[in-house]
Amino acid sequence: MGEFVPLSQISAAIAANLVSIKNWGDASFMSLPIVYPSGSFVTIRLTYAAQDVIRVSDAGFAYRETESFGATRSFGNTARAIAENFGVEVGKRSIYVEVPLEHVERAIFDVSAASSAVADKVIAGLAQESEANISEALLERLDRLFPKSVEHDGKVVGASATEWDVTAVTRKDGHVAVFQAVSNYPISVFKASTAFHDLAALDNPPNLVAVVSSKAAMGKNYSILAQAGRVIEVGQQDGDFRRAAA
Image (cartoon, rainbow, N blue to C red; front, top):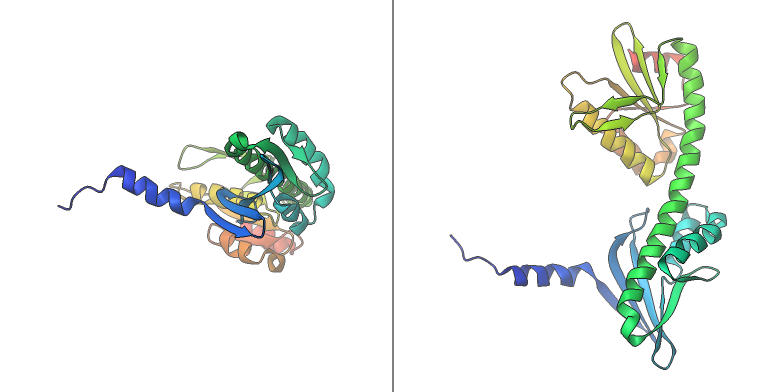
């Protein structure tokens, strides 16, 4: 057997890879192991605001994250509410705080946490709104196709014993199908994928159907959903829904 590697050596090696630093002009940029909804890492910018005073900023990355999803109108109000909880400030496009040297470490934690929380909340709101629009059309379709056989806002227990909230459950002629409205946002896609994989692991799994606005618009997210269940568009023919539920 080989010798044990000291835990201090392992943790030191890992820590060095968790944070990356780049210096540009009079600013220092620190990339942290915190992920925005798009998958990019939260980055903090350090600059001098005055002698012995450091400005710790998210460099506008949370704003850019919301911009990439077309949700900048929600940035200001959301950022101000969250920033108050973390004791930081909000500019037109950035989240920041100015602190003496001895408080920089704490400020990095506060600004990065606030920046991540703002992006998460804005994108989650978009995902819920989009998902709700798909859900409304989906439930109307299912009620028409399977009268008195549709459970709205159903709850289904997976192989892990986790209870999952789903858009609808149909029960027809001994067949059970789970329909989940999915918007083209990471939070919605991964929620549906996780639930479907857990449900698929049951001894007698239901039919699993992700309902989206457009398969083409889903991009890579389509493949993630297709691994766990069937994917159909909310505007497809009635026959496609009947086959999915059978």
